[in-house]
Length: 84
Image 1 (cartoon, one colour):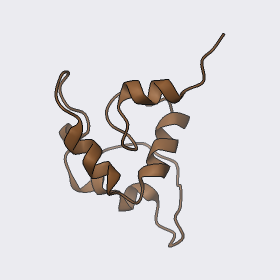
Image 2 (cartoon, rainbow, N blue to C red):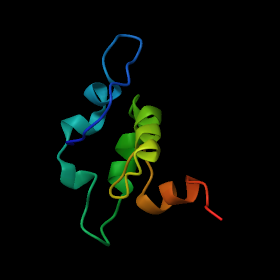
Image 3 (cartoon, rainbow, N blue to C red):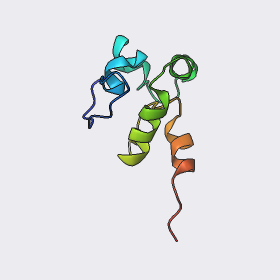
Image 4 (spheres, rainbow, N blue to C red):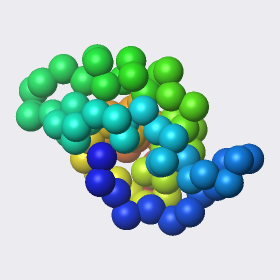
């Protein structure tokens, strides 16, 4: 998955996205065609040690497309604070 990220380091000094399971799959897996199932992408995210950091990145950078941190666009939108 190609992404422009800031260096969020783990205890070993490697950035979360370098260790993420999504780095071993194609972007189509996490950015499927509209109406396609997200189940497999979410399952892979659930097994990934970088899931929390990935989700934090997506929320901080307003990622609106694809599966990030195991959540869909709609699920991430629900986590964002609502503006009055």
